[in-house]
Image (cartoon, rainbow, N blue to C red; front, side, top):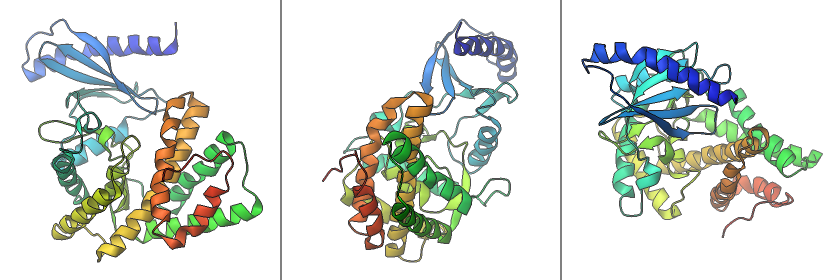
Length: 341
């Protein structure tokens, strides 16, 4: 029997033990017959299942140790809920086994419902939630987006995309250029004001719900650059927007952040430059991660969106001459993904 089926049996057994006490505590009566179905999975080892009995539904998270650790999810969920961010309530937690029972924020993500007509309203709600998150005092027990972490993330690009996926290695000259690019991107990130950073604040992790949005996948939160999450929101892995519209949304966020006391850059041009460079750091990281997921974890579908991130980078290269060396480095890669015009 496959390991994942054994794991699912363990999860089902654990759930059967937890539900009577939970229903009793909540005054929900007897546990009714229910169905357990797959809710979603992601690029990690985590899986999600929906327990459904009539109108009542709950979400089960399966985060198998040692690959995953539920403790950060529980910790950050409490932080965000305290700030008024709509996150899943942790109803029962078994950190040792890697099982969590959560309330259900709904069935539709932003990615599934957003379109040209409703994007302004949905992103307005998302920005409100992000500002609540960013107003939190920096937690002392969360890691920081420091020099070492930023460089480890950047190194995923040459290690997994260039070397493993394309099958080539940077020459000495290319390594020198790459080092200078990394220095520029890391310096820009570290110069930024720090806030709590979700790290994946994008439509796939925002639920269309009441109150809107429900926020998911926050367990990797850190203290880091103020532009990170807002840039992530509009430069999504699965959805792209016209550059003019993105610039308008970024400008609107900057004005709101200034008004609500978020420590953003003093001028809009400074903020937009920081956002651009932060985005390039993330885009290079994500390209490396998608290559790693393909070649290490056997999930090739993510590579289909690599070209989207190269397009994001190309848009920044066109307006940031300080990144000209990165443009030449990327253009020199064999089998390089075509960059949309």
